[in-house]
Amino acid sequence: MSIDRRQFLKIAGFSTILGIGAATAVNSVRRDAAEASQVESGPDALKAKRWGFVIDMSKFKTDDDFKRVIHACHSIHNVPDFGEPKDEIKWIWKDAFERVFPEQENTYMTGEMKEKPFVVLCNHCAEPPCVRVCPTKATFKRKDGIVMMDMHRCIGCRFCMAACPYGSRSFNFRDPRGKDENGQPFIKEINPEFPTRTKGVVEKCTFCYERLAKGLKPACVEKSGGGIVFGDLEDPNSEVRQLIGKQYTIRRKPELGTQPSIYYIIGGSENA
Ligand code: SF4
Ligand code: SF4
Image (tube, rainbow, N blue to C red; front, side, top):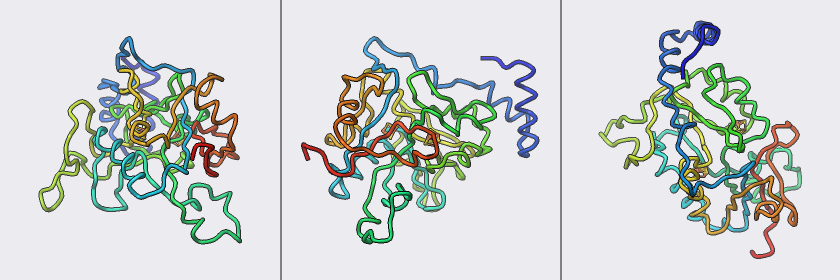
């Protein structure tokens, strides 16, 4: 993909404001290998008008239930472990109810309820503010609703991180391909089928676009023991629509108008 003069000037302008070399920025754009957007879909590819998740929290009973899905995602996507909370890279993680649903908290809620852990990830918002602010279109929304990251286009300005109201994006302050002071690699075992990233780029969940292209469900869904259901929100017969239609579900910060595609069942399901 080439860039025209207008795009060049726009990117160079942003880069100057941000103190990033224009050449670096443009090289990033030129390199647009765009593994994010140009994965060939096979004949068995899973398709939808708008992908979404229903997460049934009654199925996440133990710490291992959380660890299993987090490990499944982070290991296949070469997510580095820098060992420092301030540098943490996370695509899917667990967080306390009071931070996941701050608007639902009330004075009389017990500490135990406030601390109840929830599974969180990018919401693949239908109206994603992160996409609107990205100067290089490194983050963009696909027709099927997946909010993608093209790491080659990211110039590290972190506008998207500031715009995301859910903290769903992480920045590589260090080189994820590097090692710690004891010589231990930040990525324990590299999956050669998924690209590693570099220092200075933003990353997040991409709904396992590379697995969907091969007809596979997202890794976290597979390992969730039925706790995460995946499907087409626009299909009234899909399992996600059946669940959302029959059960009380909530989404994160709906008042912001971002239209998250992740729905939570917090009161348990019929089958729990
Ligand atoms: S959760 Fe954040 S990063 Fe994900 S689509 Fe919404 S605004 Fe963008
Ligand atoms: S959909 Fe894929 S990339 Fe997103 S959290 Fe689940 S396993 Fe990770």
